[in-house]
Length: 112
Image (cartoon, rainbow, N blue to C red; front, side, top):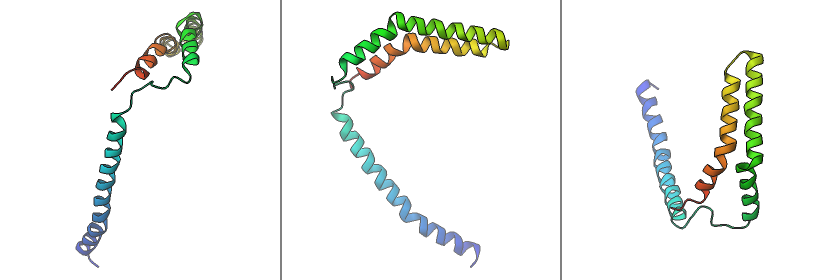
C-alpha cells in the first residue's frame, strides 16, 4: 500500500466521524438553547436564609477579619521571604473576601 492509498483510507475512515460530530454538536446546542430560554439564575429559594447569613458574614466584620488576616499574613511572609509575591497573594485574598460575595450575588441574581 502506498502513501496515497493510505491517505485515502484515512480520509474515508474519518469522514463519518466528522459528520457525526457535527450532528451531535447541533443536538447539544439545540438542547442547551432550549434549556437556557426558561432559565433564570437564582430562582430557587431553598437556601435563602443560609445564603443571606453567609453573605452578611463575608461582607460584615468576619469578612474584614479574614481580609485583614490574609493581608497581615501575606505581609509577614513577604518580609520573611523578602519577596513581594506573598503580599500580592494576601491582597488578592483580601479583595476576594471583601468583594467576592457581592460579585457572586450579582451573578446568581442576574436574569437572561
